[in-house]
Length: 484
Image 1 (cartoon, rainbow, N blue to C red):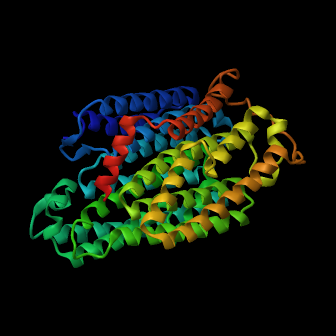
Image 2: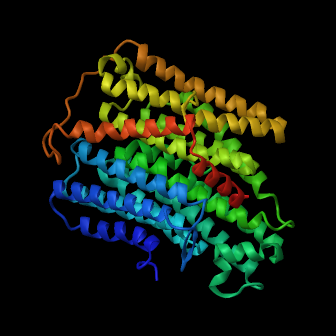
Image 3: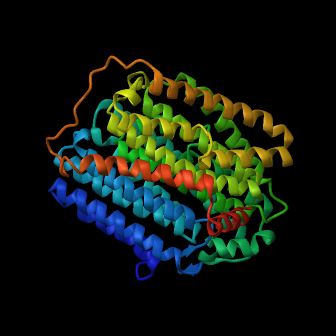
């Protein structure tokens, strides 16, 4: 059974809480309960980190999922705090407000399940549930653009999840003669017999899983839902979408890679993942120069960074450590960026010009976060990108050129916007006072709930870049070994 165990409780609590939130008419009570549920989830994740790794029924913990689980629980908590402070800006009705809180908690439960699932079929169910919850959040504003974005997300996400389901079935069929029964989808069991399974079927399964889950991870070519979803959904949804869903989908790919890579008769899963990641990096780097909407701009930045992580995992070895560190740093910094955009209340990049001198408490954190996401030292993204380039030069020298081009083009696009925000003339758009009608927290508390998460995320990203704790480094090395 899932629920009596600590991992099971971590999954069940937000799902049960989400159902309860759907029935609570008071926005203030719902927001406070949303924060309490996210805080309880983070406490459970910390408690789980203190226990030894192992399999418990259909759930398990190891070095590959635990760092992402802790990260996801933290981002879930900080996003719940941010959403409580900024909920009036979204203009939700009582019904859509309840739907947001319910979908948010169900998303968190599905995300936790996607990481903890030891059965690859259960992973598929979890990611599909997280996708449906995300689609609902995208559509909550109910305007034409929001409905179109949600529909696009549903169609492309449905295509991706269908491909992933087919890949999961084929993966099970490849191991069926050796294992049989539900064990043919057990991650632990599959790794034990992968060398004896049918190499052709394993290769076919990985191609479908890579493209299917790659759609949810925002990898090119089935990535076009991501900018629309970021632009039209609530700001809080953008934070968890970049910080959680993309990581969970890439984690599912890594689980498949860890199995398929053990069979010498298969196509090289690392090479396929590397190629998809490099394509994503180059396409996103160029696309950053063409964006005018701020949230679409940072959605393309997410595609770039997921591509970089995929390159690291595709190379394997020490580069996988860079991939794990990159996922952690990207999630922390990108969610901080969306928090500041939500506070700024401006949609277009041109409207952000001069924000730092005009509204320093929002503008300068945004500038710092953008410098971090551009890969400048001393933040963790610089450390992970430096290690990635180093490993590329040592193992695949030809890769350094396109990798450096992608990094440079993307960084320059970000730095151009940083210059406008920090030093450019103030945009002519009028300032908009934060709405007070329908506020769910006291006016004095709202700025703290909105901005403390920003500073916390940036501080953690800084610490990961300056002094990676030895225990965490050892865990990332083990995660790279598991991913292959």
